[in-house]
Image (cartoon, rainbow, N blue to C red; front, side):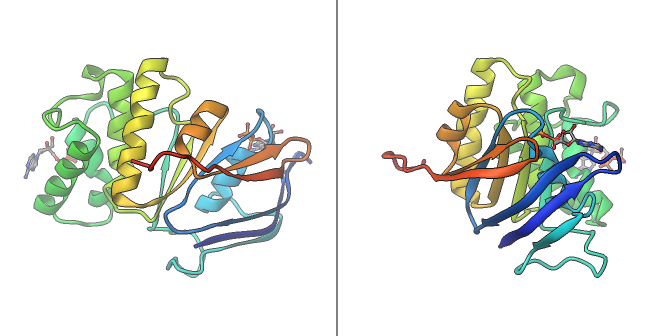
Length: 226
Ligand code: ADP
Ligand code: ADP
């Protein structure tokens, strides 16, 4: 469903952030991108999401429909390390925001937002404001907001790196269960080998200077995945 072919990215200051990246991601895959700081993981996610153009190579979405400029990718959502919630809106309104921006009527967006909040374990917190929620809960709201549009692909850039270990463990478990149930594709950027093995079916290891793919590993868990 996503194919990067010979993707390179050179920034205006001359930094070659990515060189000849080939990567195919299938439907329903949970893929981790693992590698040291500066190996181009964020750059690759941004290019996939349409924020910026590769200097060479192509990113193809054979099964998705995006506009002629290749910008709008309604099938795709992004979760960052920072939950980026609007402080003056409660959890429900934050989750409903992408639906509001795409013109979904109020009753429908409220009911879909409430379902999305429930799916991340936050039923009952609809009226809470971001300042009233813990870091883990804010991350859950951010995941609900990403999933409320029913994306086919979810890009996550070190989403849990700022959370304590216990919270992070719970979120890992719940994310895996959500993925097993709803079957969106995930590309998950992490520094954590533990996290990548726990979560993924496949780990793509990147190396730096210049950023490139250095290994593509299938993780064969002996356990049923949720
Ligand atoms: P990672 O996410 O793996 O830590 P990044 O994708 O953030 O790596 O960065 C890859 C390389 O590109 C680094 O050397 C970084 O300094 C450089 N880089 C990232 N963004 C820019 C930019 N806007 N302009 C110039 N260089 C950049
Ligand atoms: P705003 O008008 O502030 O841009 P929204 O239109 O998304 O934001 O929602 C405004 C507020 O109204 C939210 O706090 C939301 O909780 C509440 N609200 C509106 N309609 C409903 C509904 N049908 N069910 C539950 N809450 C609702």
